[in-house]
Figure (tube, rainbow, N blue to C red):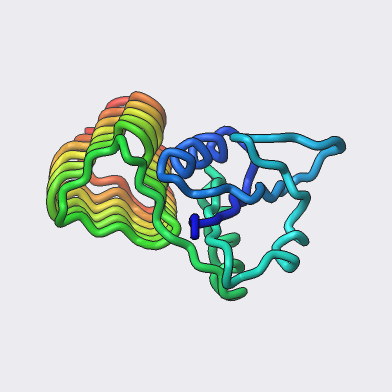
Length: 204
């Protein structure tokens, strides 16, 4: 029987997730909209079912759930709620990404098209490794991190839970990015970033 799944979220990332699922031969039974709008929308060939109340109507044992929400905090909340409700939350690895066989990817994480992840990297639960991002050897990406498109993480970097690293940013080797830190697009990180810090530009 063909695998079936639904997607939570209807924004741009939902379309990325939907495209990957279709390439993997997984049937999308529908999408759940966090902010339901009037009218019937179709995304990646699947209908938008309605709001979060739809989750109670879907058969837990028959459908996998993929949370397609870019905001780290919202994604964490949704993953927790779905996990408590008993849904299976598989990692999604795009068939046109490149992962070494010794990479570990946590549940509810998404590795997007063109991403490259080197040996002995650990990717926690609920992480987005976005389009074209590179994560080098032995790095540790904490839970509910978002690495935006084109990010480069050098070897042996630690990224704390809930951090966001913006498009095209570069992080030098052996550094630590704190929990819930925000790194601006195009930034170059040459020293550790503390928890909750916001960094734009060259950080040295």
